[in-house]
Amino acid sequence: MKISIIGNNLTALVLAKVLLKKKIQVDLFYEENTTKNLKSVRTIGITQSNVLFLNKYFKGIEKIGHKIDKISISTERQKNDLLNFENNSNFKFAVFKYENIYKFVKSSLKKEKNFKSFKTKLDKKLVQKKYLLSYDLVIDINLRNTLSKKFFSRKIKKDYFSRAYVTIINHKQIKNNIAKQIFSSSGPLAFLPISNNKTSLVYSIFDNNSSKINEEKVINLIKNYNTKYKITSFEKFESFKLQFSLLRNYFKQNVLAFGDQVHTIHPLAGQGFNMTLRDIKYFLKLIDEKVKYGLSLDSSILKDFEKNIKYKNVIFANSIDFIHEFFKFEKKLPKGLSEKLFIYFNKNSAFKKYISILADRGF
Ligand SMILES: Cc1cc2nc3c(=O)[nH]c(=O)nc-3n(C[C@H](O)[C@H](O)[C@H](O)COP(=O)(O)OP(=O)(O)OC[C@H]3O[C@@H](n4cnc5c(N)ncnc54)[C@H](O)[C@@H]3O)c2cc1C
Image (tube, rainbow, N blue to C red; front, side):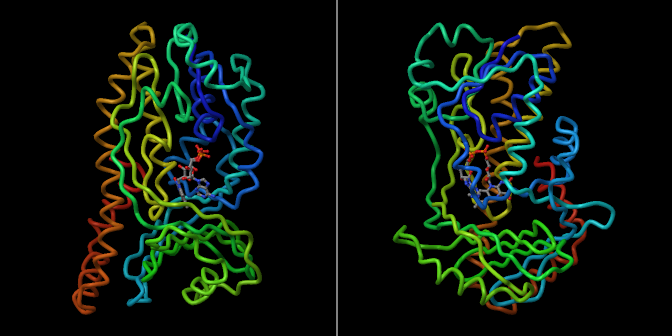
């Protein structure tokens, strides 16, 4: 069995590895090196069950992430923890520097005999019919080439009129195992510990005119909300326009669309890559079933994948969107009422357990 993957981001490499473990031959095609990407300050929070899944394929990957035991949530008006999610026996999620996890995954592919990667002009290659026919399946993660523009153009989109500002703060050493999310009046601000003296910040700031806010203003806002860290310096800032988008069809012929471009969500819950990992798990399950019954891999597997995963992704992505809209609306509620609401939810252990399971494993 032979699968081609288009793209060389983290999703592409993880997918390549898990398919190789199923004894599938993988050819990976890409256009650009990721060196520029790796100099980024970006981090990824990965939930406990997904870290354990990755650890099965990438032994020791668990150790390069910083484990978080508690998540606390507060708002502009109510500075104390309104909601907190704890795990006494195990970690809730782990935060990875993108560069570290990328390099770890990439180096594990070096020893794989059934893996080949080709740097090539994608458009020239992909539009050839014989290319598609030479593979059982093609998985497109790049989704910016002529082929994907033809196959996967229909999307549901929403503009958040927000930009995420991402940086890392260096600070005095502390026990740093609690992630904090503040729903500030400018937008959600997340503090995600990556070591005892470094914390990643993701600040999604509302802005209607789509131009960037200057760095100094963002730093002042952060300093205003930071009550915990003795900050010694800020690393560089990166910023992204935030959008919600869901692809309407996941496959065409023997080509499957995959990864962030299939479902782009607001980063407030740190679930984008986690959704992709859940997609990978389900795809593997379908492959196992085919192999078990001696069936070949063809577009029927893509049909099953779309049928069983798309609706879950739609519900999950919309739940994240609902949280975003809820906290925008919460600011308009009378303070007493909003306080009562949060006290009720925070005391409700069944509710908290359900939310924790949902965030960890999805639907
Ligand atoms: C600000 C922000 C924070 C996020 N935090 C989490 C998280 O904690 N947990 C999680 O599961 N998913 C998170 N996501 C989604 C996650 O970044 C992507 O799913 C993941 O990076 C895909 O990586 P890739 O290498 O496969 O794809 P790539 O092709 O490298 O990237 C795809 C997307 O990643 C996002 N991205 C690019 N640079 C950064 C950066 N510096 N910081 C964050 N995202 C970037 C962009 O939206 C881009 O379109 C976040 C997204 C954003 C925009």
